[in-house]
Length: 459
Image (cartoon, rainbow, N blue to C red; front, side, top):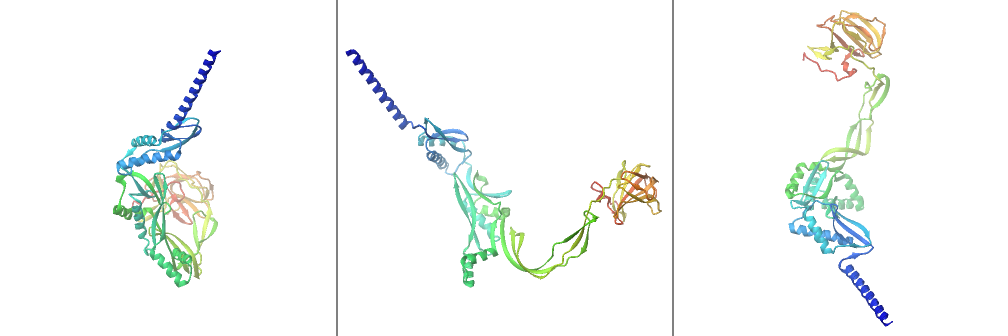
C-alpha cells in the first residue's frame, strides 16, 4: 500500500510537469514566433509569388512602402519596379507570420530583382495618338498654361492640376479658375449693373470660356528617363505639337447675316433616282444673330444660335427629286472588248462606247423596249437600231452588218436585234453603243455595271 502511494505521487508530478511545459511552449510560440489562431492572415505577393506574411493588412502595406523607400534612397531617385503587388487575405486556424522588419527585408530583396535605375516617375499628358511626358507636376502645369495662353487672348483664365493619390501613382485632373483680370471684370460688372457676383460671373463666362478636348488625360507613369522632357524643352515641344492635345474655346458673338431656309423636296416617281430638277430658286433672308462659337485650336468646330431677330424671311429652294428605280442595262455583245469610250476625241464628242468584235457577232438588246428605228439612215451610223425603253431612255446600236428586228417589235434583254459589221463611218468591225437620256447621249457607264473608261486620244 505504501509503495502504490509513492507511485501515484510520481504520476501526478509527471502530469504537472508536462502541463507546465505545454503552457510554456504555447506562450513562447505565440509571443516569439507570431502564431495566429483563427485570425485574418495576409500573404504579400509580387507577380503572384508569395514573399511574406502578416496578420495585419496595414503592417503588410507599411512593409511594402518601407521596402520601396529603401530602394529609392539607395538609387537617389525613384526607381521603376516592373512588378504587380497583391496582399491576399485568408483565414487559417494556425499560421506562421513574419515580423515587420523581416517582412520588409524580404520584400526589399525581391524588389531589387525588378529595379531599373534608368526609369523614373513622370507625368504623361495624352490625347488620342499624341502624348507628352514631362518630369513634374509643375512642368505639366506650365505646359497646360502655355497652350491655354495661345487662345486666352484676354488672359481671363488660369489652369491648375489636382492630384489624387493611388498607391505609388498619382491620378491627376485639371481645372480652370478665374485669373485676377477676370476677377476684376466680375467686380466691375457687379458695380455697373448692380447684380450679384454669381450673375456677373455667369454672364462673363458665357461670353468667353476655355477648356481642353474631352480626350485629354493626365496621369503619373514610370518611364525611361530619356523620354522625359523638362522645363523649356517641354514647353517648346508643347508649342510645336501640343495642338494635338486640343484647346477648346467658346465665344459669344452678335452679327447680321444672310441665311437660307432648308431645301424643300418634291418626290416624283416619274423621274429616276438621282435625277433632280429645281422648281424654284432660293432667295436669302436676313437676320441679326447671337451665337455661341466653339473653336478647337483656333478653328471653328461648332456654332449654336442662341437668339435671332429676323429682318426678312428667306424663300426656300424647291427641288423635284426622282424616286423611280432606273432600268438595268448590259453590254450588248458577249465576245468583244471596249476599244473606245464616251468622250471627246479629235475635236468632237464620241457619243457612246465602241465594242470591237468579229464580223457577224450577235448584238442583243441591252434592256427591254420597243424598236423605234431599224435601218441605214445615211447619217454615218450605217445600219442601226434605236430602242425606246421608257419616257426618258433610248439605246442606239450602230454599224451593223445585218438586222434581226423590225420597227414596232417589243424586245427583251439579251434578244438578238442584229449582227456586227462595219457599215457607215467605220474603220473595222464593231458595235457603237449609245445610251440616250431625254434626247441627250450620255456616258453609258452611268447605267452599265463597271467603272467606265476615260478615252480621249485626240486631246
